[in-house]
Image (cartoon, rainbow, N blue to C red; front, side, top):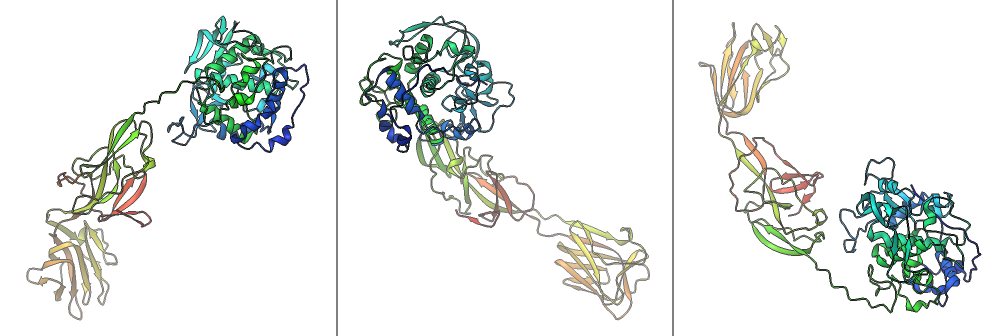
Length: 608
């Protein structure tokens, strides 16, 4: 990972202004003109010294680790949808200035195998250029930026420049041999062109001005320090500071940085970053606030006296980010309005469009129509919106079901959302006769075993109880003594056939409800529960088997039906799963549909 550089000073800086006193009054971008009043009517070294003073106002080093917290204010993609740089897929993520990746804060390298794996805290002015001391420069956020770790590694400690023969490239970043000559279209302190050779790193065009102004601000801030360049490629751009020389830059450094500064004007991102750094580290970069100030040090007005009223601060509403150069006398052609592509968002209820919104491309849906009412007379409950209509009726909720505006994706094409309704449907199956045989001789009972638990088979249950002696299994039959009962329960019973064992005593058997015929040993009737009682004061009946006939009204199946239009047919194949309440999963939230009402799992009813 690279760090920062700078240069030795051969002169002392005369502080002409009380930075400590003034810092208390600088609290927001609204104070920018007053913040720079100390530079008014100055030129040359006096102007440079004043800028040095300004760069130190409010500064307090956060330390290298403090950058992690500071990045949350200075280097994240905006989360406000109205911001011109808003991107829903990147909102709140770290803004990479090398590879154009977007990182979750905390995904710091570590190991990496390729681009976009993780980010580094990159010293855009490599630390080897000034010996790597962990001083204030080491942690200064104006040049300590989050960048793709893999691309940062490829940059190594090479100087910035413009590449001729590319050896590595990623998302417009390049590494390779330098072009032989750098040329800018306007005069600088040392002319309009400079030669260069060797390997250089060229960042993306949209950040060249950002890095140039970062370098210029760092030179101005640390010009009164004892730090000096000791090795590496820093000598291509930097030289020792002297009032008679070039304020810390080589000819190549001046031409390159002024070219990038001019060709890539201050952007909204850079303004936001400057404000974010003041909110954390405390100070500001003068060449972001007043871009044209650089022309009075290294550019076409070098040596002239600056009148701050002639300069337009980037925080002024009249400043056009990405276009203005900060000179009030410039003729900025009006920027033609960017055509806005809008798409139609149609809200369909019961097969009819009830509302059509026109929404700019890439913007989210801000509000939803009022919860609609189904045209069905069976009162389905509205549960949300889907982007695909349901053909007729379905038993499963749509895979994509939106209930809140925030859940909808950004608009990228014409789209229709369909209101989804749900209701509970009951259907009865056909009558299916069934028989269930209870053969007590083949149920694994032991001789003289007391019967204390019911017998159950396929929904039919037989229970023995009471009598002078407890019901007991003996020689192939259950002995049920006088006064004892046998209860048979099932869904719908219409007949029970008895078989008795040897030496049965023939006590009277009564039944409630229905009729027991002792001649045929058969009960007939219609009930879901029949109680048989053994009569007499002594003796017993020996029940060897029972054949229970079930012939009810059929089983009832309850299921949830989902529909987007009442025009669909009602006949569907559904799962034969008898359930009382239907559980519905909507956007990973579990709801319960009871009848035609939707409830949360805590029992709160969802209003239609």
